[in-house]
Length: 374
Image (cartoon, rainbow, N blue to C red):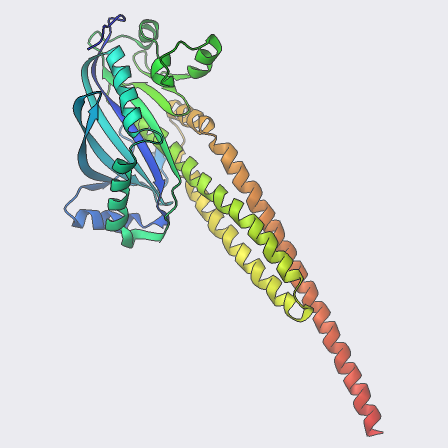
């Protein structure tokens, strides 16, 4: 155990590592819950622990699956961590690994959080996460609609404290400890500007709670043991992941669309109208599917009356650049909408031209027949 210059010790807390994957176009949550329960495993629908449903609620409550615990070796110490998975109807699974902490000096708490990050954080722990991912994919295959093998993923790390022995207020806590090493993962001192940016997103509702958010880490001091803030952070990460997948899908679709349009335009006039119409229908279907799913993502969490959680949720969305990715998806959808509208117009024009040509042929045929008869 290291020296404890701050004199502050964690009474009870946890380090929670999230890893999120896109596994399907959509997930039939009712069927997934039934399948998991039939395997003699625990499955339940999520709800925020203390917030009234009318204030903050999931659009479609995700399903929480219990998984077998895993033993981690953190700086030579064997620690058992619990595991769970949360399924969202828009095709994302979020794994949460919880490492319990008790009677640990603050410096050791920071060191252990960094050890968890090195073992299972961004770019690490592939064996652990992939094994659980394959378990979920295989067992719930029947509930996955259009499963994907995409490797797109997100991760997030949270240090949670539920109790300090001397019960400091949030103001006292920030005076006694330096949150920068925990939130940044850096052992070297940060510049004043970097520290200011790192600690910018701070929130407290009562005098004895504190939430600090960054791009990839968060610190939560919650003496009442509530998990709503972590749930909100997880939903924001799930939304980011799904919107990133749509963005990549549309990035790949746009060049293909341009190529198909050019191919259709080089087609003989006799067949071009049908080509344009078929391509327009295909693009319309794509837009309809992505629009439906983005609406599901946007409505994953509905915040109405809980101002505190609403502020944290909005800050998380901004930090994770969810509005930016969403705007990019909307721009690409707009391009595709304009393209299929133009294709329908061109298809109609080509049909009109074909009809005019056929009418001229018929008139010429009538004239020729009349001449031959006389």
